[in-house]
Image (cartoon, rainbow, N blue to C red):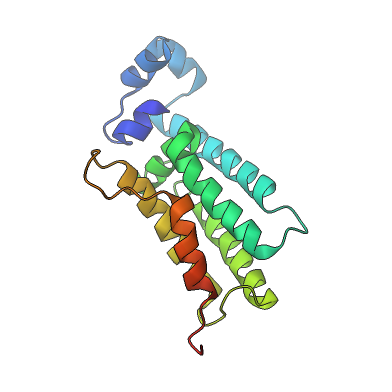
Length: 179
């Protein structure tokens, strides 16, 4: 997974993957018939990680705004720290072939976040001035932006953690055009 996360689909070879995990190329091909099959398995692992985040951060009965914050910050943290979701995201961003799963789990992430936004709007805890889907895409753009900023060399001064960004996001979400 580290190879795909670091180098992307095109620049990762099965030889490099085998060397990284300490097995022969033949043994790797014994588990995965092709690079595409391995890619699909990695994207499925990312989906499993997303399902865990979803279950832990927004169980039934959780108020929508705290659930939204928990999901957004957990997803950003996973993109920073969890190799399974980092590799899956990189493969999806590369448009890697994956047995029909190249879009991976991100459409589900967007639907779930939009659902939490809608619930928070219905509860009156965030502004309903913007459509839930657009608000969800903005939140996910911030998540992915913090992920990308973390890849820049140290000292550039662009790094922004999602935890510190959430306060600004929350202020923007709760503000209404009519106020």
